[in-house]
Image (cartoon, rainbow over all chains, first blue to last red; front, side):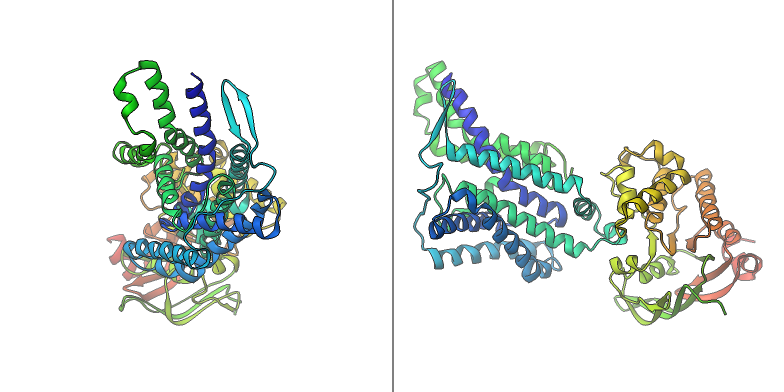
Length: 304
Length: 238
């Protein structure tokens, strides 16, 4: 029983962070209908920013969040004005190849500056601490903090989108860009803002993640794929959808633990032989695959 | 001569080298209702979109309150005081009636002013007040058109441009929409109306223009146009 509860709990914790990872992808898609293949590389930038800021200044890793957010916001805006703005004039395939190129560019830039080795944070008040929450659940402080701060940041972005004038303008742009222009909204600025928020949120997630996940220049693709699965599950362009889908995908990544629990319950010999841990992410992509067939608009529908 | 609020001088528009508007001139005076009539494909909607900066004008002048606005970005044209109610309505369907209306006041910053305008629109269209929290996706065609027009009024426009507001509506609703235009005219609104219901809209209008294949072929008061041979033969089937 304990292993089931702790697996579910761990899944929800990582799910909250993954929701934050996917938030930017769904916002950018919602506003511009462009899929950013470099999304995971943005996350990587956030991880390196958090790591290097903390190591260079010796400051508490959690305090690097604003730095990471600013770097991501800027990165998003620069990508929009320097690059995305031009590719969106082209056909869909140009946009796909364009952001794919951005992914390779950022990845190699990271390789050039930081080298291929894994790097991790070993400092800060959270490192090495964990809390016993009861029912056999022991949660590392780094993950607890990352999950809590992800939820807070996600909620803040949700508030901006749903409760402020600029958020409404962003929503209007995503629903009908020409209609938005007729209201006097500069959709160009809204597009840039979507990239800014998209970049800023995923780098926050990155700076949180790096507290318990080591970073290398190739880390991006894994998270791009997970973010795709979350966005597909929640509905493309859906912000609240991304949150719940993030939790669901988090739990899916803990299927190996749940499998252990089932193995223990049913006690079939063959169950213990299945190499579940190495199939961890297969379940995420399988869920993605099934969703695409059964409910291609996601659980919450597009842009809701 | 009265100062024109809008003056269009000899503008030309092409869609990929095919001329759509070939030298169109038109003027609107303050508090006047001007109607442009023409068959499908005569360039009526393109003309309004050209004013809005939504299609490119490659020759001529567009002066609004004395200022050249030709080929400004659409959002900049809106900020000069022109609102455009598109024929497709372009509501933000996932949002509520009130959210749509408030987006119409995007260019205003004064919150009291926005509330006043909202109350004005609700008094003008009481049915929208009843449905303020409803998603516009669920509205009937007539109600959706009310939202589109109401949204256009939310920014206190100096000029309201209506693009075929009766398009796709049942006959009873057509009358309702044209009644709305009449009421707005009585409120002193300056209106540039493009319509396919030729007789009714010319009856409302102070002046009108007849557009054929991108050119003005006739202009005059509404009365004059209704009695003219061009309009009688081409539109009224008399």
